Length: 400
Image (tube, rainbow, N blue to C red; front, side, top):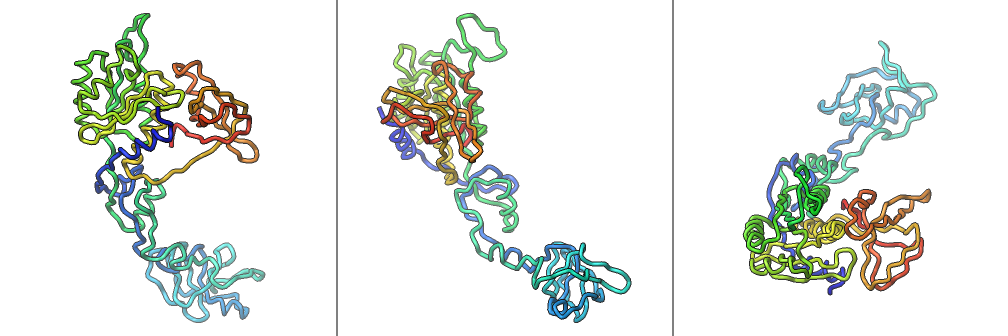
């Protein structure tokens, strides 16, 4: 069996990147850039006034002048004016600094009447105060966003400021989620005592959507080899990624591995030295599709989806954002098996600003109800079995 690190590496090596497409900048939110965004011009593109008030010459103020004849008014968007000697220009926030002016006195510090603009007697001014210098944010040609950045709302403003009406992003992956099992009954339908509600498939779809992947379809397929072959084959032909839940263990009704093999899917590994999720299966389709067959127990399904499927999808898009997070255990944990432990936790913080992981015990890997109390899980290495309170561990939140 592979270690968790070996499994992640095998998946990374097998993933093929998605093609790029061009979308309007308004539609780029949540997408991954496939081009750098560079500054169209200096920012700000002129000396920008930061306060409503008057624009004056500081040298005149320094010499003791406190009253100025009002020459004119300049609003944001008006052409830049030239300040006459001994005068002031009433100025608005966002306007370009008039030629000859190098000091802004805020409106709260002046009185304007028919005799001019008068600065408070005890007001102290500084040269170039309340002036946002041209190019002080960045200069023309500066790379503002790198390829591989997932676009946020703030990034939309950056893209628009760069003058880009359209931008190149990764295509969203097409994903098909398949639930297998004769015992499963969808919500809203009559259910017998010997049956269970179908929850894994909807939960996987929801977890993917919570991480930004919404081009998904879900189907429940009975444990019948020929039916599985036909339906999985159709989904395989239509998708970049196929995610199956159930049917990958060693039981007589676990047909998924042999069905996938008959469809030309090459198995890269079956089994990872971890709990939960030990029976996980991964392979690639005949056209390079990524195929994940997740264990059927609900906790195993969600952990494996978050641990392996979500990072693979981000890799497909060329997403280079993100990093490793850590949290400290609030209580001691013992885990004797020589397996990596993915322990569900509630994340809290203390007054020192430290992230803390509070273990939430599940009653076997079928106890999906306990997961609703969690924010994710921590990763405890297989080389150890005792983890004292305060142990720092890698934190995996459900939402990356």
